[in-house]
Length: 330
Image (cartoon, rainbow, N blue to C red; front, side, top):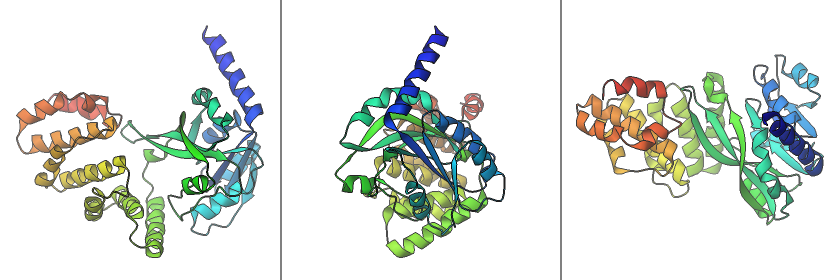
C-alpha cells in the first residue's frame, strides 16, 4: 500500500511539473555544505533552476553544475533584491520558487495546492517556512515564495527583501498554502552573516528613516549576535507598533522577557504574565520564560500552575530536553 501511495505521489508531482512550468531562483555564496539538499528537492518539481553565485570560493559552483542548473556569476552589490531580481530576469517558466541554499522544498506538501496554480487571480503563494532551531524545535512563519513569472513582479529592499507589494500592485492576489520549505540556517550562528545583515539594515534604515519593520528586523539581528541587550529598547518600542503583525509584536514582547531574564531583571520578565499569545509556539516559549523567572525568584507555586498549560508542551519552539530537566524541579 505504501509503495502504491509513493508511486501515485510521484506521478502527481510529475504531472504538475509538466503542466505548470515551475522554475527556481537561488542566489548563493559559499554554500557547499547545504546546496545539494536544496537542488535535489527542486529537481523533482522544477523544469528550470537558475543559480546566481555572488562570489563563492568553495565548491558551490561545481556542485551546481553537476546538478545541471543554469549557473550565472554576478557581482555582489550589498543588495539582496538586486541579486534576486537578476535571477528572476533569467527565468523562462510561468511560475517561480524563490528559495535559499540552506532550505529544502518538501515536495509532498505540493499536492494539496494544485488548485492555486489554476486560479488566474492568484499572483503569489505563501508557503510555510519551518525554521529548524538549534534546540531541535521549529519556528514557523508564512511568506510568499512562489509567484508568477512576470516582469512587474520583483523584490524590493536591500535586506529582508519583499515581493508582496509588486504582486498586489498588479491587482493579483496572494494565497495561503500548505506548501512547506524547511530552513536549516538556524542550526549554527554565523558571525559574518550577522554582521553583514546588521550593516545592511543600518544602511537601509538610514535611507528609509524610522521604518518600524526595518527596526524590528534590526533588533532580531542584534538578538542573534553577541550583545542582545542592545536590542532591548527597540523590542520595547516594537511591541506596540501597529505596523507589525501580531506575531511580530508578540515576538518583540517575548524577546524583551528573554533579554531581561539573561540580565536577571525579573520584574521586566514577569510582565510577560500580562499577555497571552495566539500563536501556540510563541505562547509556549512565553510560559517557559515566565516559569524560569518564577523559579529563580522562589515562586514555585505559580510555576507549577503554569507548568500545566498545554501550550508549554505543544510549542515547537520549546527545547524538550530543557522541559525534561525542569520537570525534576517543578
